[in-house]
Image 1 (tube, rainbow, N blue to C red):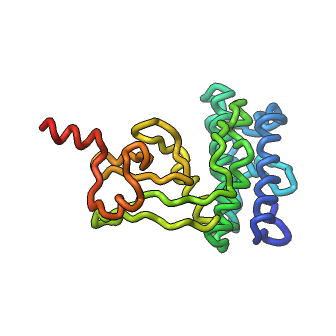
Image 2 (cartoon, rainbow, N blue to C red):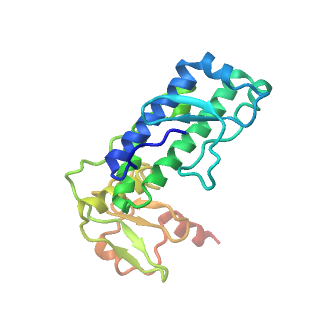
Length: 240
């Protein structure tokens, strides 16, 4: 397996390494398919598909060094070749290849801090996976989030004792994390998507989230509520 002369250390260097290896694997599984298929002879020993930072690929035996200098790709990809439909086999190898790419990137990024790891994953996630390319699946585009220039007034959050806590205005970093975490959350009343510039409150019974305006709860009122029950849960209790 080809090793880089200098180990990538920064987010940009690791992403460049990832991009090169990814391009190599895409070439093997989507462009040089016949050559790759022919090299994966089931009668040979355990073979691995390696993608190198210089965008070249090779099918060879795994490294003998234990533990290896970098995480190793899936072992024995050749054994399943003749026992599966060709497309299914290529898809399986693609999935394992994506897993290997991530493991190498985060192995190299083990000393990055939290924000750097998040930025690295964001860069990698902007590229289609090898599996998506091989299966010709189009990546799902996320709905645009709230404009990054705005600030959140805070969502209603609850500690273990059930006390409602309303966050103050957040810094840009915390704002982005909040949007990412709740981007798929829908209001239990109006069905609209989560928006970090609006006040939200969560029901302690059904754990659904609501716009404060939809359930007529203000941040000030939320601070005085020990256990919030949404209108739906309050009605259910009344019927019992």
